[in-house]
Length: 196
Image (tube, rainbow, N blue to C red):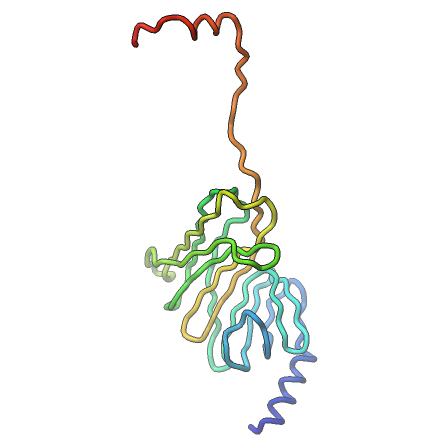
């Protein structure tokens, strides 16, 4: 196929390729900051995916996005991600993928998409349904409360699946109890202890 018909086909698909909310979509992606290099690419989204798509440019917000070439099938990992955390927490992300995987990683991004934390996945176990991977991500004890983005990326060859979700970081609270100091308690504190 010559260069011009391919460009016309890409442009036509970009104009007509819209996605209905609440339904999985397969989109032709000509440019995105998160897709792997090489074009054209297809991207299959999950039903709950939130994104903007116009003229072949995909801007993912949340949900599962699986990038692959037309002669391939998409990765479809099952990812369990936490939705809330506190400063100092260790987040556990679990991934089940039926196909072999080259690498898995997770990142926590701040409001300006700056990296806050990250981790690399490790193979945890095998089952009849696929391989189970785990990524541990440590949240700094100094991180401010607010909303962050948790991004998990699964790679197999030149295919990539990416799950994005919002992570709410709450203030850490500590359990405490107020004890009113009374005369009786003062006597106990000042009395001699036979164990000393």
